[in-house]
Length: 108
Length: 118
Image (cartoon, rainbow over the protein chains, first blue to last red):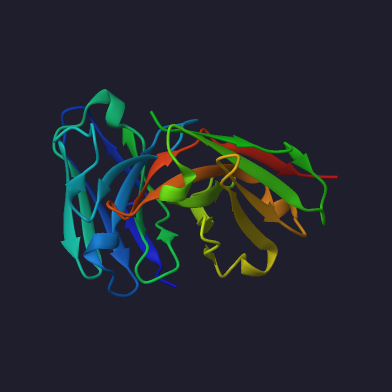
């Protein structure tokens, strides 16, 4: 089973700053299988990014992502107040589908 | 607009079987793979498994011996059963649609909290 390690665990930033979140896999994963989700407190996870770098419908372009092999990154170019949340990476190839432990982006 | 809605017992006793149902509206259940994901209080996301109308299923190896997922095309619903539950199975359970074009879970239900306690 692929273990996804997200870092840092918590990122304390101010609105307007740039956020860089890391997702490292225990072995190489298919780029087409790497996704990112956002979850706000008490809410359902929302798909942000699929296929490593493609934004889901309605996701603003301040969210970007990339990577390959075992190292993947989600970047929020300029943090808006609504971006403070938990972020999870996910992969499914190779099976089984696994999630990272999450990175919390909090207001500094 | 595609919507998913979970329904569950709320409270289950240890050693019993937890049964969950997800009702799909706005999409045909025959067109996608349907997943269950859970989140223990204050913890991260854990994939449980998926079902397909063809009968194909896949489960998280950590739960495989205790989980059964099925799809009911007549009701546009899918279900999960988790047997021999313990307190460690206390979680919010989400149903979610797997979109093969995205290779991701693109639509989620609001989730239902299931507590395992005597």
